[in-house]
Length: 160
Image 1: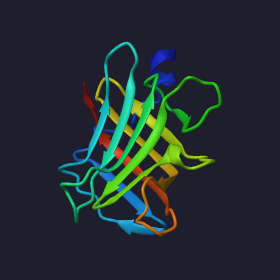
Image 2: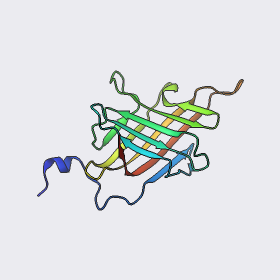
Image 3: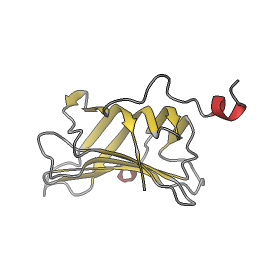
Image 4: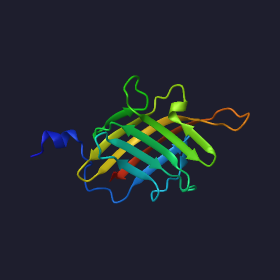
């Protein structure tokens, strides 16, 4: 007989995924993600942080897309990037070649990470994300570019 706690945690059904599955689109175009260099992490300290880092296959030395959700309660839910006066640090950054963009560089960002399932015992997590990031330093004379990022993540996360 299951406990209320196990039901509230919405564990991933079935066995733990054998490998990490990551998907990323940039302005509607799919980008291949390198699962060897990409990471899903949850810090185990007092202030838990969910960190998702998706590294591009065509550029494993670049940082790629990094999403941070602080005060992560280790539970399914919707975590928005900008919550007015919440005190939460929830943002995304993208580094590829000479391009650097941040979610907090955009005036309005309705970005969200949707954690669909998490199992702390097996350390598995599954969810989706979407965000708009704005270039921080455009080329001289060029207009600042906006990047619409979306995708999904599923796999075993490492505990820091």
